[in-house]
Amino acid sequence: MPAPDVSEDDDFILDDDDLGDDDIDLEDLHEEAQNDEYLSTEGNTLLTVRGINKEFSQGTNKLEILKNVDLRLHSGEIVALIGPSGSGKSTLLQILGLLDSPTSGQIFIGDRDISRLSDRQRTKLRNGHIGFVYQFHHLLPEFSALENVALPQIIAGIKQKEAEEKAADLLEQLGLDHRLKHRPATLSGGEQQRVAIARALINDPYLLFADEPTGNLDPETSGEVFEILLKQVRNRGIGALIATHNMELASEMDRILEVKSGRVLPY
Image 1 (cartoon, rainbow, N blue to C red):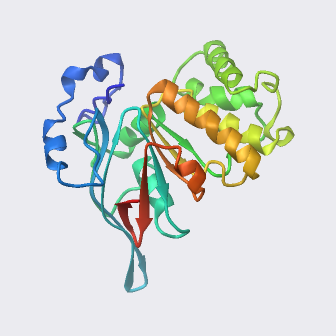
Image 2 (cartoon, helix red, strand yellow; image 1 turned 135 degrees about the vertical axis):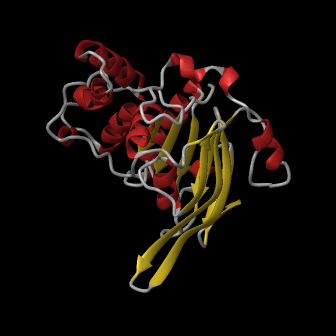
């Protein structure tokens, strides 16, 4: 799956014409990474991170959360992100998912620098091409499973009937066709998280980030939900970065990166 073309114009619209291979030149990006063991260089590079730093101020002191982070993610590649609590995993995912901004550094999708996008551009790119699964499902309690999954499509301008048909099909793929009309409070933890996965996938993203997506589930349910997530990601050819404390789950992914003292290194 090729990376979307992100223009410099504040009013850019990402449509099918923006997704052609002719617009992507990855030669320089590949060449630069040849000697860096944690920058995988095979395949179609979807996401490139260069020198990301993140600092927070505490009075007169600065707290460094991320330090000169470099990494690459390819289309169809699933990478595990491990590290102790407080190491910066969640902060990194928030930045890559365009939910937060780095203090410095660059983020590329394909060969396009998205670090300097306006808030409007970031929102369009995030809503249209990036999926995010959290440790907690964050489903709207007053909406049914079907309505929660269809909502991103409706926000994107898709007619409600079409959006709900797509949502129903996706929920069926995740084994929830019998729970379409149920509200989150009536679903089990595993079912809630499967609905959250469906919601993250409904707009056919190029990138998916997941922050401990099974962290609140018991071991058996965690394994089941994780296998569903991996199957969906692999079938769609999505590039995915998944934070987890579970090394058994991490070992099922293509690569493992470790966040340690704010730095990202090969495990």
